[in-house]
Image (cartoon, rainbow, N blue to C red; front, side, top):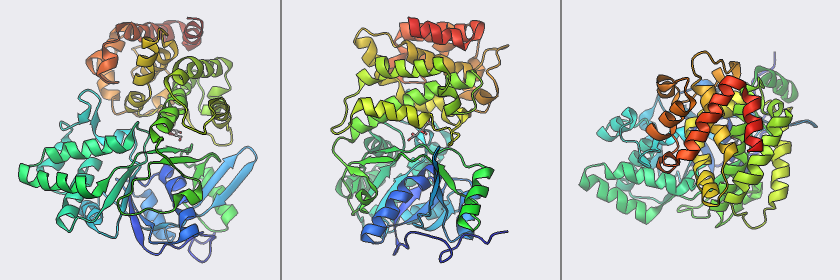
Length: 486
Ligand code: CS2
């Protein structure tokens, strides 16, 4: 049995001086993305830019990081083979649920100059219906009453409140989640929280936010599936030391960031990050073309019995549906940022989705569709309708999503759909019905799952319902064929 991965015994690339970054959301994506760029920055310029990683509830990664000197390997996987790097940028880690006060303390610590976030689309306590912070969420409501905060926005707001009181050192909050305008989105939610505080308390924090806190936007991209026991064994054999938390990732990686850092930043460009004023264009391109189409592939694939994205995209009609949604419904809704060739970008997407060595699961991409689709589809649907194009394939995406997570009685969407988790699953199941139009109306109009604007697009809602009926009564193949020929 191999000894545990340790500094000195493994090829850790860097040793950070001290910690300047607090990261909320210590999942695989962070460890294969921002950590790798930060390692490159530290190699290039050094500096106190180590990362303190905070997991929200799970102990698995934190326990392993403590047992292995905060090291782990990122396995870059392609059909050509696997290569490993050990970023080595984390200086400490803990579980927020165990030490909730520590998150606030760390955010107030002037040595921390950036807080990065990968808490998923679902971690922002955002209400699509009100387009503001969901103050009816019991955790947010409790954070507003006081005590140690447990929601991400509550943690940020309370941490910044403490920081303002402790001297008000500048800091930047950098969202690395797949949300459009993720910087201003996060800022808006933090301000929503602060505005709910008693006047005197809130005013000081708002003045501090104006003066010394920035929320740059960033577009992040790298496909990172869940770790498997096989990968753990393979990495341990390759490293010659036991690593319980390796992260698998594709070779492609991209990070576009707005350069507005109040307290300095690492030289992330050393790892290939692009600092640009066009982050909005990068985000739209990625959230719509990559993520929007990814959702379509995941739901259609799951309904067709495909366990993985490469299995799904290898089905000819799923591939045709992906090509058509890109060409007809997503691409016309975006403007390419300077330097990006959309034709090449789309070719890359197909080879990335087809990376069979990666084994990215349809159930992983299909999870949390109620929050993910709210980011991915409304803009393109409205754009298409305003331009006289009916978005049949986006309607198919939503119909397939509903078939997976709110299957009408008597319809079995299969094991990959059953494995999808979704915060709206219960609410949707409660209104599930065999009438497709009825279910579509309850989800899109009554629950306003994808925001207010879409709830008024009756023809779209009805098309989702009709395609759902087709999936249930005549099969998903028929629904794909109908959407492609419409
Ligand atoms: C995926 C993303 O799970 C999903 O919804 O679309 O996680 C995707 O793999 C990443 O955004 C790629 O950067």
